Length: 83
View 1 (tube, rainbow, N blue to C red):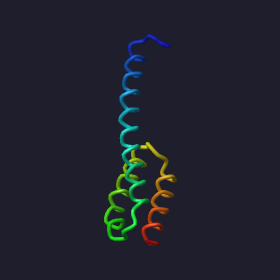
View 2 (view 1 turned 120 degrees about the horizontal axis):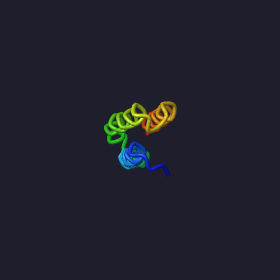
View 3 (view 1 turned 60 degrees about the vertical axis):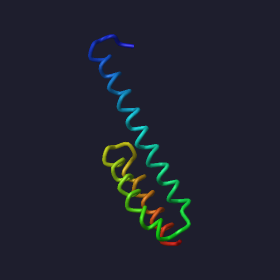
View 4 (view 1 turned 45 degrees about the vertical axis):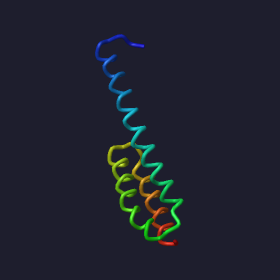
């Protein structure tokens, strides 16, 4: 491991960003799981825009790939419409 001052700072920054990204990714995954387990169409339709917003935010910040975000949103939309 390099011992340059800038390298040590970058290591600290990367760790902070990793923990931050993990939190938001996990929170979104839990929201997706709750939406998938929803059986009431009204409740699912109400929570769908919130989950889509969370997914879009992850894609915008490059935490997940934009194509993965699109696939998730598409599959969720199909599921909500089929309830």
